[in-house]
Image (tube, one colour):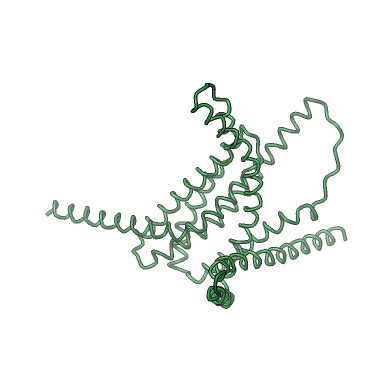
Length: 316
C-alpha cells in the first residue's frame, strides 16, 4: 500500500514536471520579444563604469533582478488569484514610469544645467573626492538598473502567467520560477559579455605567434576593440528607445480601444501590396514608441511642474 502511494506520488511529480517543462517553453517564446528591449536597457544602464568594476556592477544588478523576480512571482500569483483587476493598473504605472525615465534622459541636458566647476583640490583630496563620486555614480547606476529591471521583469512575469492561467497553482509557480531564472541568467550573461567586449578584444589583440590562427585572433581582437565603443553608443540609443517602446506598448495593451485602433492600422497596412507587410510590422512598434514618448513627456511636465510649485511654496 505504501509502495503504491509512493509510486502515485512520483507519477504526480513527474506529470507536474512535464507540464512545467512544456509550458515553460511556450512562456519563453511569448516573452522572447521583451528580451531584446531588456538586454538593450540593461546594457545601457550598466555602461560607463570603470573597466575593473563592470562585472561587479553587472553581478550586483543581476542579484537585484533575482530579488525582483523573487518578489514578483509570488506577488503575481497572489494578485492573479485575489485581485486580477489590479494587474493592468499596476503594469500601466510601470509603463508610465519607463516612459518618464526615457523622457527624463532625453531632456536631461535642458532640465539640468551644468554644475559650476569647483575649486581645485589637493591631489589626495582630489583622489578621495573622485573615488567617492565614482562610488556614488556606480550605486546610482545599480539602483536605476534594478528599478528598470523590476518593471521589465513584471511584464515578463505577467506574459508568462497568461500562458499558464488555466494550470494548477503549483505548475504556475514552477513555470514562472523557471522563466524568471532562465531570463535573468540569459540577459545578464549577455550584458556581461557586451560590457567586456573591448577587454576580450584586447586580450585577442595581444596574442603572440606567426601562424594563421594567432593572426586571425589578432584581427578579430582588433575588430572587437574598434566595434565596442560603437556598440555601446548604439545600445545607449536603443536602450532609451526601448523605454518608450516597452512603456508605450504597456499603455497600448492597457487601453483596449487604442489597442484595437493600432491592430486595425496594422491590418490595413498589411493589405497594401509590396511594402505592406514591412510597414505593418513596423507600424505598431513605431506607434507604441511615439505614444510612450508623448506619455513620458506629459509625466515629466507634471513632475517638473509639481517640483517647481513645491520649491516656490517653500520659498514663500
